[in-house]
Length: 171
Ligand SMILES: [Zn+2]
Image (cartoon, rainbow, N blue to C red; front, side, top):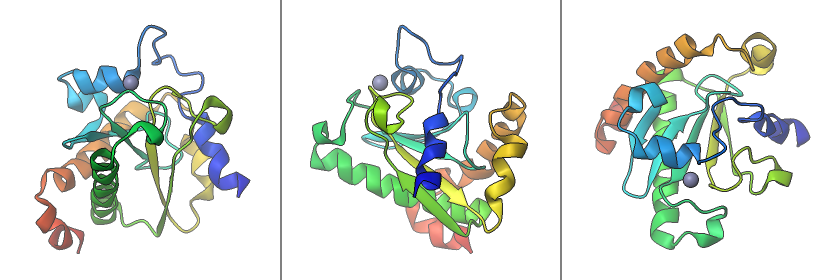
């Protein structure tokens, strides 16, 4: 299983975007420039943001608005909202990008590979058959902004659609 989890350890490691004086999840949620921040969706208790250092195209993260390090500190309402939002992410990814599968997971604590250990978040990584060559080509490069921006606009309409439209959108 190592190969499934190890890539997430790269999230934000060595990132110049991580400010010492703050949490990027809290900062981006508080800001009002979702497009620049690649913030795709704001739910009642959590939001969806793209990973700046994706393991694969369409690598999303769901974070609660609450700045807590562990899901143990989230109540049932927030936990449910995160999973409902995960459904929404899968639906959007399916509609826009047609993945063959997904990796979903939470790294809790720096030792487990959390790049931002103070603010728990759920990774959703779409997978395609034969996508193992993605990282050498696109991973950890600074060519990403345009690429990420394209993906953002590919996914955004699916997050803006009403949930009941998701099946129609996904066909
Ligand atoms: Zn935070």
